Length: 318
Image 1: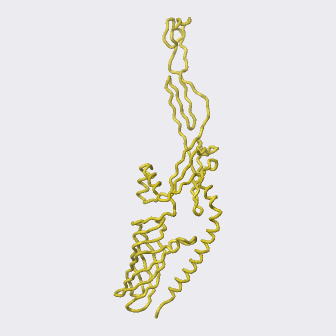
Image 2 (image 1 turned 90 degrees about the horizontal axis):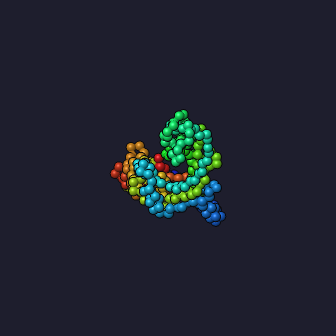
Image 3 (image 1 turned 120 degrees about the vertical axis):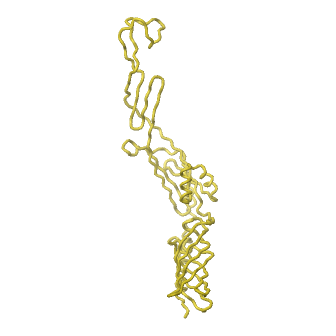
């Protein structure tokens, strides 16, 4: 007896997803006409808001070139965890700090005051005849607060300026726009913000264009699926469930690719009926839809014992 229920379920699901997709596309088209000016504004630099100038990297070459300029430890961490760079921010800040405090003097040299004026032309600080009372003359000073320590000794001035800053960077996303914002404050001795925030002189973000797709030859993904296959020797249909793994993918995201390539798995077709499945490609049916993602439809070949079968399955990634 043929089983048509899985095909009915697949048909209803596809019809519902298609309706949702076309409704979303119509709404998106209506909004795009009025969004061009908004997109241009959101991608422009605004010093008052701390909003970045945004540059979309359509082919990834600019980001790849800037990656080489990253510190070695950051680049090593990105490669270790296979992290895909979405954006690199270049920030130039300016901040003028002014303040003062009491100066403490210290003395380490004694000049001697003669009972009568030193001979004309005698340099001050050199010993002269007729010395009597020592006169202590300050020649150095020091200043210290929670961020600045300064010392003057003779003609040598040294200082240490220790400042702590806190930055908040927000990378937003709205449709095809991706505005970025930043705020940076200096922290006081108690770890509180010093107002006003620092002035942003330049803030430029180079981002990978999400529309760019590429092949990832090693991007393994695991999924479970259910579907209906046609068994040629028995001339019947059979419902199967399986667990599968794919090795490669194609799309603008490794986490949610458009296509998965080279998939194999194990299937279960009822009591005592097990087999293997092979599929060249799987399509992410949920990728273009706003409410679902990583719903995969796959045409596959199934080997059930000595029987060959072909069919279509629908599943989700684990």
